[in-house]
Image (cartoon, rainbow, N blue to C red; front, side, top):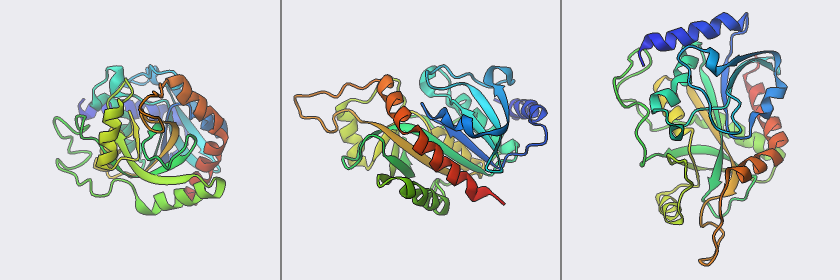
Length: 279
């Protein structure tokens, strides 16, 4: 993609936004689109109407931009994201993040459904991401650097903003005693990981695993956007909580079922987080 492609998408979105000028962008993970019900003055833009925008193909991802206000804060949200396993390259997967930067977004909240690796976790927990692993995937910054967005070799020493992450953790603690923090590991998918892969990730320090978020977080950091990430632990990863004779077969249906159970807590958590940006 060239800078002109990002500019074209940005101009189209601006033409539909009216007087709303979003301060915060949110990416909603699998089954977490319930936040759409909270918008006031809602403007919906289908991805396939936006020039050069990819289109979501995964069940549980609506494939639309939501623009409006929540608790008086102007918001833009992706109701559905893009994944490498869908056949997109990582430049396409992260395309919206650079568009957000051109829209004037300074803060990004990334949400996802993840598998728990840490044996202290349970289904339905929320984990605030404090770092990430992506050894087994290409970098989303691979290829020609777009100097308009950031430097060729950006530091990744602190991707997730410490202060905002702490505030989000406090909010989660106000709703549940199952608030967690940890390292999110990115795997390309679409198959779930093997027990051996999960054991390896556990040794490397991962607490949860998923198929999204990391490429977006890297590009956001490159664009100098503040990033906060939260995982809904919708299942325990392969081999966790199972004996050697048992197998915990995983399915996307189960992921969505857990997300459905916690969706109202999730909505309240995100609502309270949004209020942090209220002037």
